[in-house]
Image 1 (cartoon, rainbow, N blue to C red):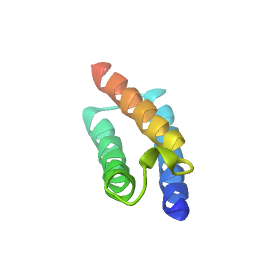
Image 2 (image 1 turned 90 degrees about the vertical axis):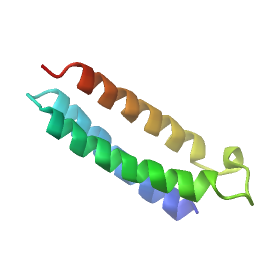
Image 3 (image 1 turned 135 degrees about the vertical axis):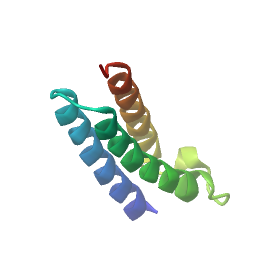
Image 4 (image 1 turned 30 degrees about the vertical axis):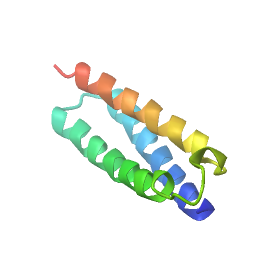
Length: 86
């Protein structure tokens, strides 16, 4: 599971970087939609890998709290980007 968390973390870092780059340039709703789709894929993996595993308490999985926080931060960034579309 730690490898899956590390992979999701790497994906989130990439999405966050792309969000930052995109937000500092002129962007369209389509640009934001692409970011949303990437984030949605990672979010689904997170839900199915961590939250659906009944064998473990998700709060005891190393790296889970950081991953959860990263998901929230990126969701907020994308929401802000959507609100700023002209």
